[in-house]
Image 1 (tube, rainbow, N blue to C red):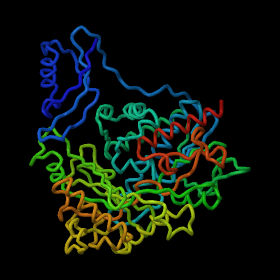
Image 2: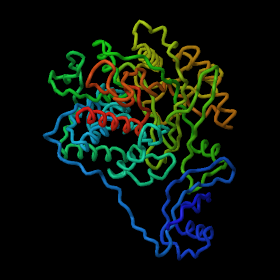
Image 3: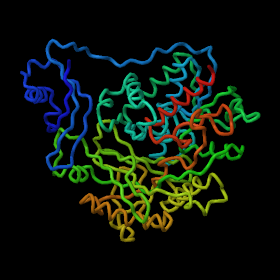
Image 4: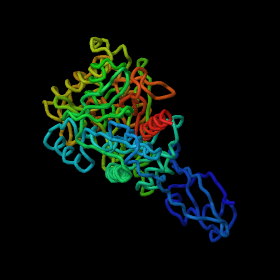
Length: 519
């Protein structure tokens, strides 16, 4: 029987197969030649002490023990071109994995995506970065693959109770992701590799009889006697089906407005909002690894920090080691930031959203908008930032210590944010209570991470699309909307997920619930 072992080793040993075999041979008291194969099941970094260690969970196969390389393969899909149709609105992770699950269950998905395919999106990303032009249907948030495709591709989730995380990771591997994502404690694909995987998923959906429609925006949901009948597109075309998975993402404001106008029940939901902070990766490495140089065997260091400030949670969000800050507006007249990293995480800078949890009471100035109050609060800050920074895709920026001291920065160095920055006192961007919490919070961050509070760090505002400002209520068991039969609110936009993995799981669950009703 292969032997399972938990161990801590140096980064050098963890990175070298021969050194690892030699180390393991001493642990189990055999010759290195007797070790046929070592499978690494889990890997994580322990940087709590000055001497950094790598935690490994391994399976050791000795000579004579049966071992065979296993290849992760896709489920067996059958042609569904003549099967019952289900409309899936949105081709983000929730929509795409819902479509795959529908095919596996013998149903035909009609995937409707307002944006372009992954290749077509690139031209629009260049336009917003270089020419400051925002395409409302194709940008960092909208288009094939959703917001995660070009904003990092992080696969870490705390949502283990929501569903089978391993299944989603294995599907991604079967579609071309590295098997490392099955092993790493904080798996990540990278924006340079994820588009090809997304493209392959789409091709598989089409191969087995599903339809994928790009540049197709839903302008109406057809409802009769509180039951879904189909949708209407921007061209006036009708697509009919009595099952609809609504997986439109956290930035599809027109969908929230449509539901509100049609008196389809939605509700305001708290979310988090703040800034995106950029440091040099070298500085973050020195703080996290307690060394001047991290060496060739350690990855660029991430960080995660949480503080309670004036009764509010202030925390790092979507931290991107070796990454850059991107412009994520979805309409003209607003600026929004987010961050991403390539697969190697080899950029010179590190960035993270630093956000504060909001409460429903914070939206009182916008209460006339009802369930859309949080969305209007969010919009007001994004639009104010746009005006303050010069009415382009430049963002308000300030050096970190200057911000804590209410001082306008006399100069802002070039950052990874390509459209550029404008020196602004951040207190002008946010309501007073948020600015005060951010100022005090950064001082607290500096106490926990020595060196973090520095004027070499640049704050970019706002980081405002952390999650949906709206929840579309659904039955906890059937996943069907509480009011409209056949409508399945799904993923981040509906308020039921917080990243690629949890959204994909939610998409699969909605597909499973639909199949249950059709048995």
